[in-house]
Length: 417
Image 1 (cartoon, one colour):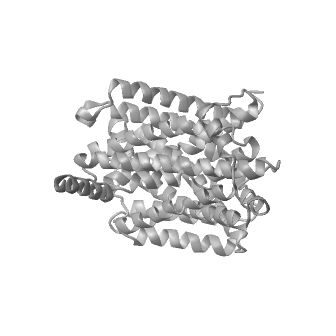
Image 2 (image 1 turned 135 degrees about the vertical axis):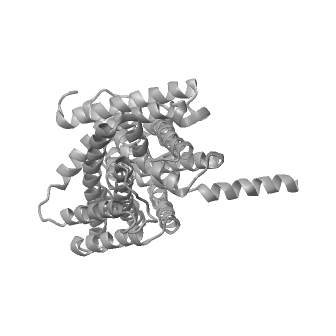
């Protein structure tokens, strides 16, 4: 009995030692744009699209598991492996696209932070500069373990959406039925919402950040089973939070025929329908998600560009040790926050085109990851099995088709009418 207890404690300590990257990466994808998407889906379609979160969760786990395994076995970041295996030209174009996408997404996060603070009566011209300074100090002046603990705490704050969903008093029987029994429609609005859900839940930057974080954390091959648990738990957590956002809006906004266009609209509309506490928790969740993502997206970009170009980088480095890494991170924060403060800046257009670029980039990064993870010279005996490859390529194909459809519906809205 004592021997079994020692084994259990040893396993628990191992999981605690490597936990972090998987949970952080998956949860940060529930950012301002994601919360807005889930809110709109719940308000416009009720519980009808809940079934999609089952295949989305499976696909997200597959994509993130491969990224983590690539990092642990190779000891290198995703961009580093792309440069070594596909050449500097391919890497340069991928990094340029990723830089543009993540700058636009960083602007969207600061816009989400500004919107959430306005709910609490704080002007964006105060809220955004203060947030930008805090985010910059956290990463540039912090050490990796401290920064990771802050990010894990931010991941835990997403529980506010679960509580908000419970306070909305949804019809759980109907929600469960719609989760287990697909309700499919070929209508244009349904199709666009389906593609948006997939596109907002699985993003290209996630592969880059997770792999870099695993490498910087120094996870060894024998620790990988614990990292795999971290990845799976993170992906499930992110999807559960997303489900509760949809459920909260379906039980209140959809039920009362109230349409919303943003997460801020949803938070304000919840107050008379689900009570002030549900609305307050929803707004707190939006603020947390926006600030969390405003930290991670520039960090992910700095990791990726520096790996791709062969420059030194990492949270534990100083400006003198890794000037490119720290200046890229600083530049994205300054630009992302600064542009949001410009009166009349077309934030919706910026967010719109960032999602188009995300949709273009995602199928490419998934396909590249599948090619790399099947190379014995990189992975040794840790390559995908035939069965895993079948599921992974099918998931990649489905995600790729959805991403292409997302781009088409955005650049030609009436195409599928």
